[in-house]
Length: 133
Image (cartoon, rainbow, N blue to C red; front, side):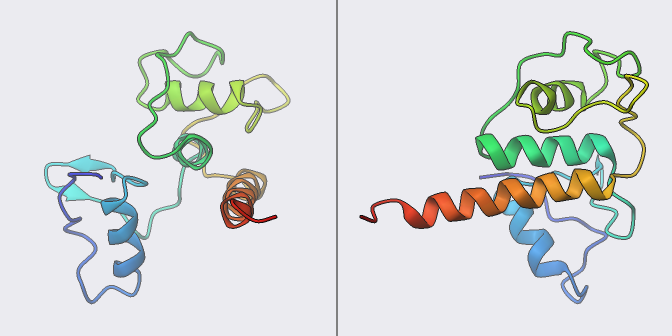
């Protein structure tokens, strides 16, 4: 379980409050700032953020990747999302652009989102078939 504080920019009357708050409580999302705790619900999701979600979808919300080694020339090993990006790459889930860069701050592509949904759907199918003959 996440101990992150509720997001001040997603009030209880926000149309997505329930979904965002449950994802926060379950450790799926942590927001973009902590003082104050903010989610930025109207912002586009970045490729780095998608990488973190894809890794959490595959490995679970308690999983934390190893430190980054510098796989992509445009992703500093010290960048917050580097370890998530490299884990998604090592898992064969996300890859670079044609020029070898990852572009972590760019908005996620439709392909990035498709991979996330695909993993979540496969997980749901696997979970529902556990214990069946």
